[in-house]
Length: 437
Image 1 (cartoon, one colour):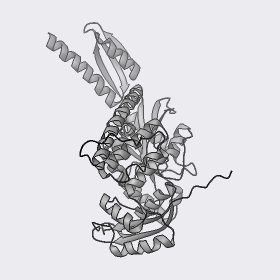
Image 2 (spheres, one colour):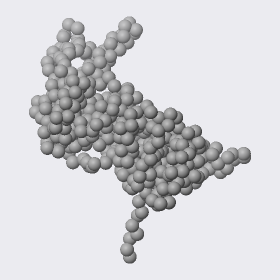
Image 3 (cartoon, helix red, strand yellow):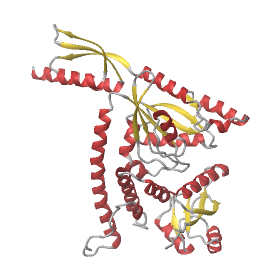
Image 4 (cartoon, rainbow, N blue to C red):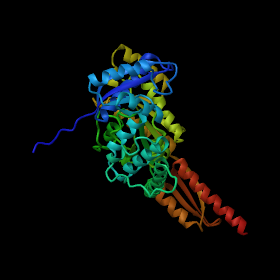
């Protein structure tokens, strides 16, 4: 029996430029929306962009543009309208009634793509939580995304109480499920925390960047892994860490992370907290940028905004401009010089032609040599557990025992966070002795 071919959604893209961006810049955000739409397996049939000082409170875009879209929906057999910004529930309802189309805003589209790409148990739960929190705030099209996640949320609601409306029931049901999911995610975070603690004796390097900039390609090149790489947005949702031995014989942990995007929904940042911890606890960030994209500096700023939101904007950063082979003409050379001036701590590579990677390795090694410094600790003999901890987590260069003071004198090569931890334990021990005396 011949299998029925799944019909792809046919979509119009709809944007509203309020004048905050130049026409060309706004067009590029709609180009990105088209890329997102294709990643969600929908077919883009056309796009409609209107310039208004402020959105129409009822239909977001103006009446004339709505009329134009209504006329074209039947002619082009379009069933979905995808908006470049977020809509209020009332706007979405009004537009749906007028056009007889499914209405999807930018955040819903991104959440839907995340749901499609979630593979691991952790990623599925994090996406499910983001969907619940988003739908809790909007309470429309409540269950349309959940079926995408295998083993997703059941739709059987609680028994209706006296005087309760359906919306009140829905909100109560979502609150319950959010609480359960947060508990499960917290349990997973504890497991991840144990794994991260085992890696504290090594320097940690996290690869960050705008989605589809080439992060996983760089990760594969450094670690000789074979992570999935595709020319689509959000191909990577789970962080992956590998230990790599540099030519200095020193091991470093390299982590590939989730891609960022402009207007990354806050619910996703919150839900992926455990994944993003890999970024907040890294010693060095490798910020991968698509140098060939006209909006690359805007993308850098978008990534930096997310780093600020997760309190990782104080990290040391090495900017890695990928696809440098695509900017070899005169204008590209001017751009390269401009980027080098704006981001002096940077290197240009081409993943396609396998060039520039050695310089990345050299710069990472230089950084690690600078930040991993020697410090001498005098550990009281009654803190044998701390001595064992230092032996396990740090590199001991020299050691001796001071018989007069009954202290272990350890010259240690370590990073600043571990050194601070050791100093605190010694200080706390001395304080306890002082109190007891």
